[in-house]
Amino acid sequence: KQEVTQIPAALSVPEGENLVLNCSFTDSAIYNLQWFRQDPGKGLTSLLLIQSSQREQTSGRLNASLDKSSGRSTLYIAASQPGDSATYLCAVMDSSYKLIFGSGTRLLVRP
Amino acid sequence: GAVVSQHPSRVICKSGTSVKIECRSLDFQATTMFWYRQFPKQSLMLMATSNEGSKATYEQGVEKDKFLINHASLTLSTLTVTSAHPEDSSFYICSARGPGQGNSGNTIYFGEGSWLTVV
Image 1 (cartoon, rainbow over the protein chains, first blue to last red):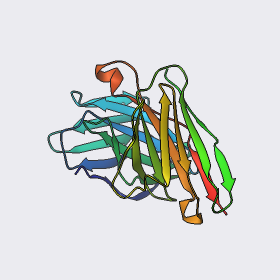
Image 2: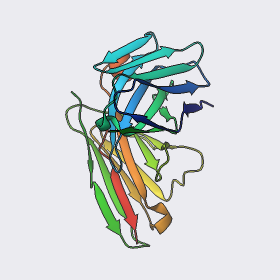
Image 3: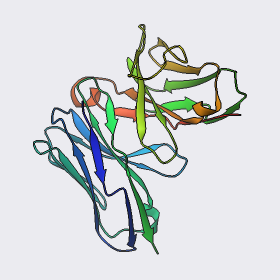
Image 4: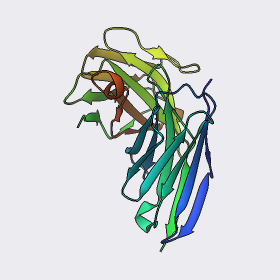
């Protein structure tokens, strides 16, 4: 059974810092891996999607990498801003198109 | 891009009543939709997979008689919480598998979510 783990569970950094969020999964047979952002009381915003054949994706200050063989992904946020404060969720898609989510990393960027 | 609409965004119901949440794919046909539940400060847990024209497939531990899922058309899936109790209060969110094959077919689009409060 696929399990997705995110470390750290919570992170507090001063504005301007570069930071890395980690995601690991136990079964490397995935279709893709996706990073989402969730603001309190809100739905999900898709940030980056990495297909299983890809190694990384970039969007603005965000960069996500995927190492399928080792079951790991990282989300790199450059020059963090208070507006980046949110919960970041990692999810992998299995062969049934189901998304299995990690427990998330709660990020607080202090002004 | 593909859009998934979920309604209502917030609903309050009395204990013992039933409430229906709709999930619509607005500009594409979704043969497969998924329903998730999220408790406060926890991650999303898959409840069931909804396939158009057939019975939903429920995840282990999810009561199919309590959480009725109907996927009557290619653009609409509904989740009905029957005989709701306060412990059913949660954030429910649906998603739809994107159209096409290959990478397009494995892109998932999420609705905005529905907050259910049972009093």
